[in-house]
Amino acid sequence: QVQLVESGGGLVQAGGSLRLACAASGRSFSRYIMGWFRQAPGKEREFVAAISWSGSSSYYSDSAKGRFTISRDNGKNTVYLQMNTLKPEDTAVYYCAATSQMAWPVVGRPDYDYWGQGTQVTVSS
Image: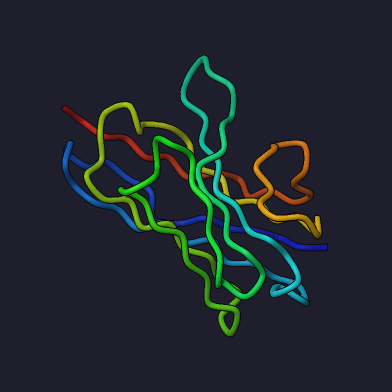
């Protein structure tokens, strides 16, 4: 069992930056691929980024590529999402998730086993 708690959301102006963090409890954090998803009002939850078990590989959605960076610290059981050059269309609730899938990358929402409660990111124009 893994419990995930996100933090770091907030209100930022367009062009600004935010760093989200997701702290995991439980054992064997390094055995999980970690991902970030987001859900805007009235829209489906969508994949943003994923990072492999050791952190050596990462994968991004087209909208995140070049602006967002996912990283993890297995010693601290934490995964991060650095978001730069934010746009109003990035406004959403951001969720971290963990999967025990052995394939790479894992981008499908149903493939993730554990989810955090989400943190709101609002980007003003």
